[in-house]
Length: 161
Image (cartoon, rainbow, N blue to C red; front, side):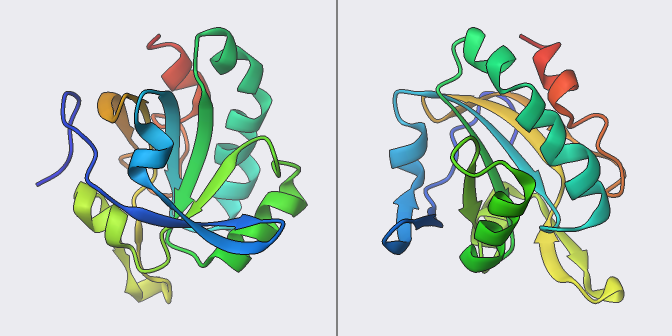
């Protein structure tokens, strides 16, 4: 079953990189009592993710913050070290929170996993964006074509506020 607006996010544990090294952060830590924009990409450093999806959110941080968003977070089925390297190389470090869903448990719990085995990528997350308010999904935009970042773009989500 796929998550939809009005549903609460499932409990999850993500790995984030800190100055002291990898640490875990729970979904409750991230979403409870807060307004969070969460977007997911199939893979760090992949073409559409790097050239369109992440930059759109990075460029519109101030617009989201002006609308009361407490945090912008990205999740991907990658390990924390890959996501940390991507955060640093993209200029998003310290601006967007990179949540490693290394085993894809969160993507599966949402019903938004994607099988890219034929492309050598294994199980990944579908591309999406959502607005989460106090742990409840208020807006959800799942990209119908994984190689595009249109329906799930920062501009598409901003237009829904």
